[in-house]
Image (cartoon, rainbow, N blue to C red):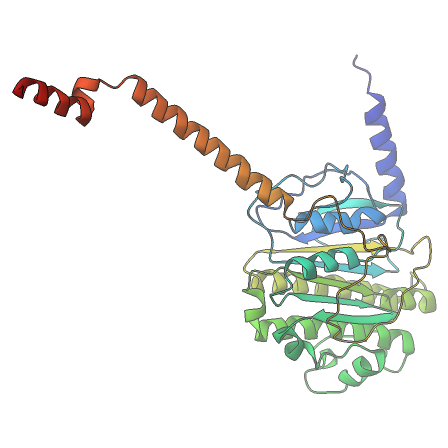
Length: 355
């Protein structure tokens, strides 16, 4: 009888342990050239920004030692990446045919490094970099994107006012046991309204999804956490909220995937609670300045820029083509008949005959 290897036992134990904790990373949508393998490989929360960068075709400073993401084509990248972080629940009722992985070490993280890369590489274009969090609202956009999203409600007061306006989700969404007059319920409904407004704006301004610059969306939702804290996980309010959020996220992912012509990656991170609090510094809305990288406080240059892979492949294949061309030319010259193939020898022979 074959004994199981130590690695298999460790993976199995880790999967069981992560399954108990329940925090998940779920891929709702991805293009055909971005392949997520089926398996229960846990990924650390601090590695999620690196995963997002790799799915967008960017280089990372540290290799991602995680087998869930397969290497894709070199010259094909998604047009957008959407990451939604849901706090207060370890999993949602999503379809079984989608790829999901356990989330290990759920520490707080941001996509600031990925946003900085987008702005650095596509500074002359109009990339949309939208980041929303419970304690800070940040919209980083350039050029025409500013005019598109400038009316998007981002503060809690603005979002709550949006719920009473025309086109509010309250007119079409069955809230069931949720109440409009309760603070926790209102926060959850406000976040659902933000998802609806972002999707509606992109569908009206599809030109933003047709440029060559990739877009980045990072949305952190904490309304479900507030409902869980107020009513408890066994309450009908929490059950209705999780059901509403699961259906809204699926529609949100489908809308994004359609706007970007099936060239977008949509991930959902569900986490019960983060292990350490995340301190955020306030920034102005619609800021266009380059995002600072706290990991490199002295603004030191990297050993190579993010175009290293492109330059390397151009030089490599050009050298291969030139070498093959030299070999073909040398081979033909070596096997050439001077009296038949060369015009020099033919003219020389005619001159000798005339003499």
